[in-house]
Length: 64
Image (cartoon, rainbow, N blue to C red; front, side, top):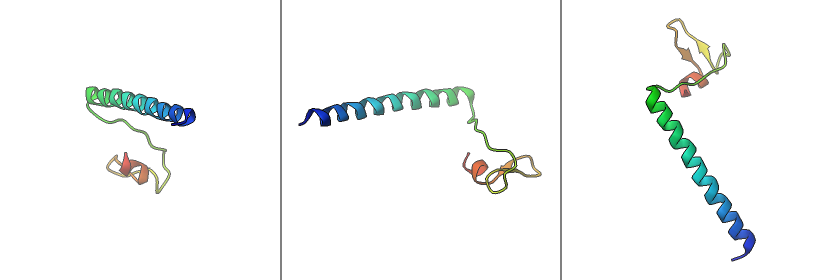
C-alpha cells in the first residue's frame, strides 16, 4: 500500500468521524429544543411564500 493512499484513507476516516460528532451534537440540540428551526428567503414565489394561514409554501418551506 502506498503512503499516499494510506494518508488519504486516514484523512477520510478523520473527516467521517468529525462529521458524525457534529451531527450527533446537532441532533441533541434539536431534541433539547423540542423543534426544528430553519429559515427561508422571504417572499420568493416558488421557493418560499407566506400563505393566508401564516404557514409558508414553496420548495424551501416544504422541505424545511
